[in-house]
Structure formats: C-alpha cells, structure tokens
Image (cartoon, rainbow, N blue to C red; front, top):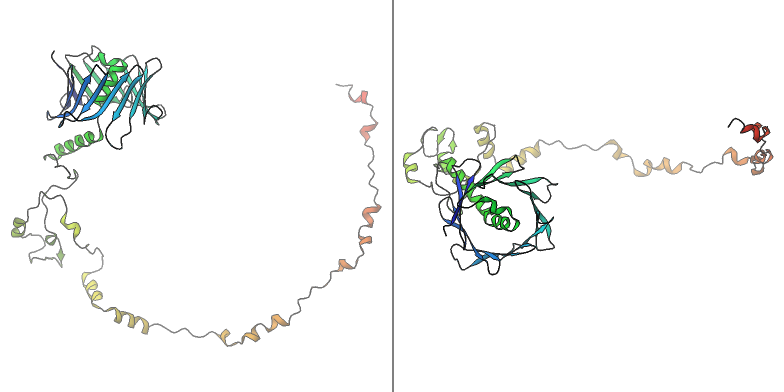
Length: 359
C-alpha cells in the first residue's frame, strides 16, 4: 500500500512548508521543513495503542497512547510531564481533556460541529481558542486561531487520503496527537524565521537568536579621551591593524559590556578632572574650617529651678461650684410636684361607628 502524504503549510499560502506527515499502515513519520524526521509514531492494532518513538533510537518509547471505548489515555515517560486523558462526552460529540489523569483539572474541550471541531481552552470563559475546519471534498484541513473566522494558523493538504476520516472522535484524537506542536518546535520555527529575515544562517544550538551578529570592535576603539582615540588616531578613525587582528564575528557576546561605564555627566571634562585630583582630607578640612559654630541660646542661662518655680507655686486646687450649694431636695422638687397624668385626647369623644362610617 502506498503511504499517504499530508503537507502542512504555515498560514493560508501554500509556499511555506513547515512539516510533512507520511501516513502509512504501520505509523506516521513527521518530517520537518528540511526533510528530516522530527517525530516517529507507530501503530499497534492488536493492543489498540499508538506510541511515539525517538527518531534517533526507534526502539525507545517517549509516549504511549491507549485507546478504549471511553476515549484515550496518554502515558508519558518524561520526568515532570503529567499524563493526560481524553474522554468522550455528550454522546461522543465532545472530547474533554484533563491534565493529571481521570480526576485532573479540565484543560481543553473539543466540540464536534457540522464542518469541523472547535477547541476551547479552560479559563477563556467559553471562548474558542482554535478550530479545525474540514474543507469540502476532504482535500484539506484548515486550522484557524480565535474562531471560525479567525486568522489561518496552519493548513494541512491531504494527498491519497481523505481528510474526512479524521472527523470521527477516535481518528481525530490520533490526528491531534501527531499534529500538535511542542514548545521546542515552536521556538525552532521562530528561530528559523528570524534567521530568514536577517539573511543569515540559523543560529547554532545554545546561541541566543537575538544576539548581534555584525562586526564588533574593541572597546578601546570607542573610548574617547578629549576627542583623541586611545591609540592616538583622531576621533573619526579606527586602527586598521587592530580591526584586522580582532575578528570575533562568531563569538556571541558584546565585549564593551565588561568595560567600565562611561561618565555621562554634562559637566566639562576639565572640571571633572580638577575635582577628582583634590584629596578627600583636603576637601573635608576646607568644609570644617568654613563651618560656623552655633552660639548658646539665652534660655540656657536660666537655672532649671527658676524655670519651673512658677508652676510649682501655683495653687492647682479646684474650687467648689455654685451649684453644689443647692440641696438635692430643692433641685428635684419641681419634677416631683408636676402632675404627669395624661389627659384624654379630643378624638376619644368621637364614637367608633362615626369614625368608620365613611369607610
């Protein structure tokens, strides 16, 4: 049987191939843009499993995917990566992905609709993260970000295979596993695009992709001493011998970063040189000689005993108020003599039948 080929393009245009999937009976080989095997998947129909193997060591299993009537379980053999479960819900029209096992937190949901699958990430308040649109005729699958009318993220063109076979939940899970991108693959794609924009080759492993790759110069060439270079050349020239003997275009660091910071003060250089030559002891001596001594205040001549004498001699005894001379019986006599009997109001003289006659 001839294997099928699924070509993945970045964006909507078919001029930038990002990956190629060679889909056969025994498994799937994922090729990168340079036609190198980046992933290797093998099918085992007898145990209803699919495994991801190391391309460098095909016998080494990196992940195992176990399918059953309720969904799929992903078993990972990498330290620090929790397993994921994909379970069918809503009569098989929805797949719920949980991180950490059957009782883990819901990570994503995949809802099957008429013309594709909508992927919703947990925490987006029901907002669609991306959709998988199955084009009419089964010739391609378009992945859009943000919704059904969002920007085209990827486009997968099918050859010798109909894309409609992945509309079923079990087949879609298989398709989802070998087409998803890891963070490492996303970073490598970004590095390659940056290299294309700069017009240089891809950065070496371990090299920062944002590092400056142009010609570098010695820190002494850029240091200005009163308008004359340290090498004796005028300020607008560089020593050709120094540039010739220093060729560090392949080194990923900036030499000037280790040099002493340049003084950016706006004061004239002559003034800075004069103040820097004055010793600290001489500066401090001149400052202390010009300082005026504080004179003793007039209040310091008054003895403490004389200061607080007036406060001690004052009589602080409180006098009795005039109200204290009024006896208590006289104070409350008027309140006891008052007649507090309440009188009947005028409304009490109106008979009840007359009151409610109008109602």
